[in-house]
Amino acid sequence: MKYCLVLIGLIFSSLCFAQHQLVVIKRDEVTVRYLPGDQLVYKRKSANAFVKASVIAINDSTIITSADTLATHQIERLRFKKGNFGNVVGSFLVTGGVAIFVIDQVNTLLVRQEEASLSNSVTTISATAIAIGLPLMLIKKNSHRMGFKNRLRIINQDSPFYYSDKYLQPKGYISPHIPRN
Image (cartoon, rainbow, N blue to C red; front, side):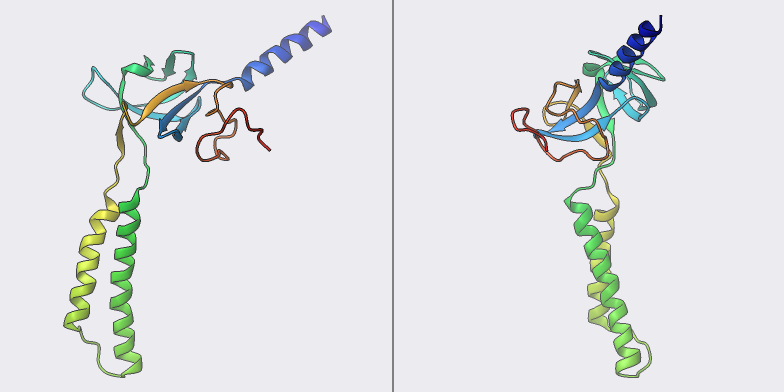
């Protein structure tokens, strides 16, 4: 009896380690990884609105969420935040525009010891940099269409994209033929 319980415990513990993962793959790189318990915001092909639900289980062909059970081919769009080059350029422009303005005011007050005044050229450069950079910094593409570029896949432990720790995942493709050290 005692050995039977130990055997059952080992079987169930091995099943816990062999979880399926839901991944979005773009150019052989995992963009987003979903595990059971994560929040999934998706839009079905037959619906007009996005649904926010938590992933309960991931099977070989279906995803069981708190709102519905669906297959990967039924998902048209996923919402997840991912920064891009425009966000970086926009934050650089906003920071640079504010820095130019502040440095000019400090130079006027402390170095030249004059009253604070707005220089026409510095104000124009600063306002232009902030006006161009602010929309670039704030506009983020949250909704990603599943299809040719973004592939939604359910992977198991045998896949080269599988990684057991969500937060320490490697970048890019991991070859199954090269040992992981």
